[in-house]
Image 1 (spheres, one colour):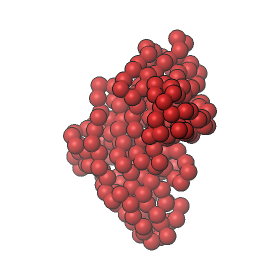
Image 2: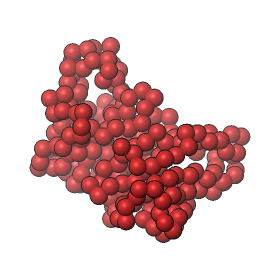
Image 3: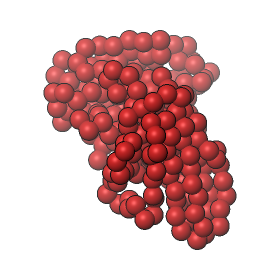
Amino acid sequence: SAVISQKPSRDICQRGTSLTIQCQVDSQVTMMFWYRQQPGQSLTLIATANQGSEATYESGFVIDKFPISRPNLTFSTLTVSNMSPEDSSIYLCSVDRGPKYTQYFGPGTRLTVL
Amino acid sequence: DAKTTQPPSMDCAEGRAANLPCNHSTISGNEYVYWYRQIHSQGPQYIIHGLKNNETNEMASLIITEDRKSSTLILPHATLRDTAVYYCIVRDNDYKLSFGAGTTVTVRA
């Protein structure tokens, strides 16, 4: 398995501001993923972040709104920019680990935008 | 889009086996079936995965039909702590997980 931590665990923000979410893994991984879970909904993949290259975004998500950094093999950040109440969600990072690329998830960051 | 179909909800009795079905009729030959669960908005927890053989670990068993078009997750002795949303996912070759709505499992005393 993998030990994954996220900071902050939750936050309440004002519209128009930005929040950067950190994801730290206990050992080196190649692929990291960022997901969003809107209230009452399932998880939706935002982007895939590989170290040394730009993140690959899924349809409906753009870099200007969700810039991602991946400075090394154990860390990544996701920024939610110019927030609106519609951005209120749980944001989760995950990593691939193991011989068959099992994906493990962090505890999530619960964001509320007022 | 999710490639699986699951019942939206099911109840089971504490101490009994819980059998969770999943249909994945369009699965291709090298795609794995993964099961995760999510307890009350925590991060999803990996349970088990398989390709074509049945698999068992300390949490559950996974039974995959011979044609691979469906599978069943078995929780052998359900406890109240197993109450969660269970997701059956066919993972594609670029390692992405596509989550559907899952099955809300409620274990009752």
